[in-house]
Structures are given as C-alpha cells and as structure tokens.
Length: 452
Image (cartoon, rainbow, N blue to C red; front, side, top):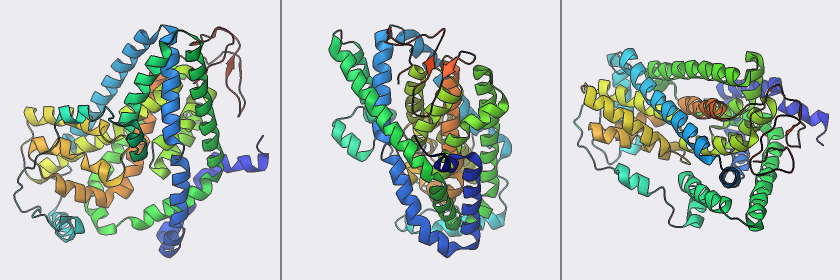
C-alpha cells in the first residue's frame, strides 16, 4: 500500500498548484524553465513507456472476451454508430465555427503582414516559394485508399518500434478476435496473460502519477517559455475560436457523462479531472489511458470489460480534437486566400478532416500537423503555409486539442458502456471492482469481477 504522505501528490489541489507554478516560472523565469525542461521530457517518456503495451493488452483481452461472450455484434454496432456520429459532429463544428466566426476574414493588414513575414523568414520555407501574396501550385498527396492500406502492418515489430498506433490497433483487434474464437483452455490462458500485462503496466503508470506535480512544473513552464508573442497575437482570434469550441464540447461531454452515470456534476468533474490535467499538460492522449479507465470504472462505475476496450480504441481512432482543428484551419486558410467555400469544398473538408484526424493516431508535433495536407490538397490550398503557422502556435493549441481527444472519448465510452451506479461495489486502489449484485460478466461465470 502507498503511504498517505505520498497520496497527497495525486490530490487535485496539488496538481492545479503545480500547473500554476509552472505558468509562473515560464512567464517570469525563462532560464529556469529551459533548465528544468529536460526533466519534463524524461517524465513524459516515463509515461509513454507503458502506453503501447497498455494499448495492445487492453484491446486484445477485451476483444477476446467480447467474442467469447457472444454479444460482440450488438456491442460493435452501437460503438460504430456513436463513433460515426461524434466524428461527424466534430468535423461539422470546426467548419461551422470557421464559417460563422470568419477567422481568416477578420485579420487586419498588420496581422497579415506579421504572418507573411513569419512564413517567409521561417527555416521551414527555405526551399519553398510560398507566401500569403504568392500563388500556390498544388502538390500530390496520399490518396484515401493508400491511407487505408497503410493501416495494415507489414511487420508488427517494425510498427512497435515506430509507434504506429493505428497499425497496432488493427493487429490487436485481429489477434483478439482469433484468441476469442479459440475453443480450448489455451484461449483462456492467453487472455489471462494479456490481462496480467495490462494490470502490470497500469500499475507502472499509477506509480508515475506520484511524480505528476514535478512533471507538470517542468512541462508547463517550458511550454509557456516557447510560445512566441507576435505570432500568437496575430492568431489570437483563431486560437480563441478553437478554445471556445473546446469549452462548449467539454461542457456537453460532462452533461452526457452525468446523464449516463447518474452522478452529480461535481462528482463527474472530480472523477475526470486527473485525465484532463494529464492530457492538457503532457499533450499525450495515450498517456491518459490508465487514468481514463480508472475514472470511468472505479469512480463512475462503468462496466470494465467495455471501458478497457473503448478507451484505448477510441483514443486511437477518435482523434476528435484534431478533426475539429483541421476543419477549422481549412476554412481559415480558404478565407485567408479568398478561395470560395461552396458545397463542394464543404463536403471535401468534412470527409477529409475525419480521415486526416484518424491518420494522426500515434503522431506528434510536425507529423500530426502534416496530416492537414489530406484536407488542403483536394481544396488546392498551400498546406505548407498553414503547417508553418500552426507549428508556431502549436504549444498553445495542442493542449486543448489533446484534451478534446480524451474528453470526447470519455463521453463516447459512457454512451456505449453499461453503468452500475447504485450497485454495492467494493473498490480499492489496487484491486478490481467487484459488483455484489446484478453483475453481467464477459467471458467468466465463476466470479463477478470485471476484467480488462
């Protein structure tokens, strides 16, 4: 058991104070922020170390149990419907806010000059003849069919070393189905092995959470130090629109989770606070998987079998924050270049932003933003320009983008999973939830325990 003196490090008040201290150091003491930045990177690596093992083990064991339970068809259809609706809503919100808010049209000449000068002076444009005052020749981009074909891994070990999350998810689903269809005792043994792996790496993440305050101070201070004032001022309206969308969605998600869990708003907020803080500060959606599972399962009493499958699967496929961001950026750039945005452009942006968002699974930094080419190339817009601008403001926008990925997936899981609020549950920090009455268990008739 962990000493109570250490448990205070996971207290929400301590975590929030760490964020505030990080902001103060980043603003007032840039040199200190630069000096402690490597410690923040090391903490982030510590969290990411267990991400892929958790992703694979959770999906394999959960899919296998669902297949053995003979309810996978009903479960899958509900998931696909909810996922499709949320992906569509995300793309539509970005387009709608971009059309109504007109972030590209409200820029004054001063801000346009700032953006133009920034683009032309950027190191990333050394070999490019692109600015806000020059024409753009469309480049070839990867087709949708090529993108879909790339989901299938040619070498699973190469996918592991490269961290290609979508390939790993495809492999894990196929492997889970195959294990679930095994009729003899070997299937149960393999499921137990993957379950044990999941619990072991989850415990490693729980240990790392005790270092969260220190990690937050180092990460947040460096992020604030890296933010450039001029480009951020020029793009402030665009950033504000995106954050406005984020706040609206988070409030709506909280209402959905409250309705499904039958808990109070305060309880829902406290339950989801830890994954929200981790997402916002580390900018890694995959690092939040254990805390998301813990929030829904142990604090809001959602069914563990479905929760442990939906959270890693949803965070991989449901890149909602990126979809909203890409669709909003596409409208912004269309307005910036005075390109008409009719029904054809609307449909292209809607479909392509969903594919582009999904394609960002496992990608970070420039690799994430580069996926916007899937949206902009069919529109004939210079994606090199927007990537340069988005990279400059990414330190400000990425936290909200990551938070939206995580928070919408919490709501999606709440919509699909069963909830057992009101049942007598025995919950401890190091043990599973044991439902004492009315439990329905996937793949086990011997004890009423929800496994991953």
